[in-house]
Length: 511
Image 1 (cartoon, one colour):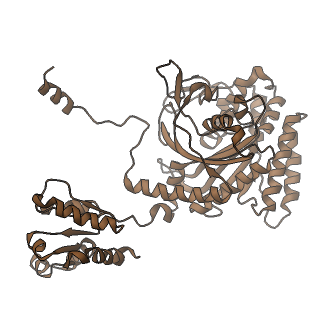
Image 2 (cartoon, helix red, strand yellow; image 1 turned 30 degrees about the vertical axis):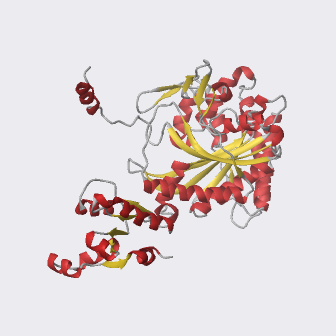
């Protein structure tokens, strides 16, 4: 193929973003960073410290904890390296943490508190609100067997939501225990290793209760369900009696009355709840752990309006072994079909005592939770949190280039602004002054610095305040008046340029 033909073919390449992925612009990135800073502040207040793991792990490090049991090894993006070892993009931030802790176990303080933020990847069918790449922000405590660690995680989740702008009463941290669920499974005949697959199918069905409702979950617990696209999900194949028992259990909701003895309430609540697990020792242990978490949260001032026991919380991943929790937003929103619904979960997690132990000979207790960054960001937009809707950062001061032969002189001007800590840039295109002014507008520049041959001969520059100029242009009726007034444009000696630019910035942005 000739070079012109290659160039012609390249020019016809259509730019396409792969399904399930999104591009983000500077405004969204800046707002997200402000939100992440608040989350980080909350985590560090509780004594957590940062750690970073890579995007790629050995596939075996992810183990069997993949997102879809019916498509083993297809829920993650995987490839082979030059040694023919299988590598995968991380599915979540928890499995890489387990590998990191096991690898550095002797050097880390125990309990070990850490937080991590980063992108994770799901090789799943994309859809509305479901992406193949998205960001999570996790916090975990490794090496603490007591459920006091789980209680702290729940308290921190509540504090974090309030710190980013979710008001009290607009969220609740719901807590359950997988041991209670295991007790229910034993009571309906799904105990033992040979029933592990069906148990996981049941848990994933219950996890969809908020989205599908009781009727949809009933189908997933029974023969299976066909979704709106026609895709069929195989069910757990339970009997009608077993399905009804599970649905009665997950529907059992209770909230203490205001002014009542809440500790006494939880005592009675869990006493009655024990009936659903029968004689299962595992189930009774789970209820006792839940009771302890509620007592600890109540004692610290995190009442039912912030942290609450809820049997519908199960979490879909298999590695959870004890308490599980979800931070749910309770305020109403209107969905794409015009229906008023709850916003739903923005964070979740639980205890995973077996995950780190996969790499070591002894068990290592661990608990943590993960914030869905994109989902929380959307929620903050709904409630108009100032974190995501605050004033945008000003664009750079733009130094125009009117004479290409004098580029070095213009470079000296922009260097003086940068050395003074003022965000600025030199125009590097090939257009004339009119186009350069349009460019500065599009960049959100508060002002531009102009130096033609006349100004250079006098040792001066002109500074044009674009914000003030736009206001004046609206007030001036005719083009002749505008030219006569030359609004917000003034000449200053070069050695006063930095100080006068600072005055412009201070006038519009303070400081």
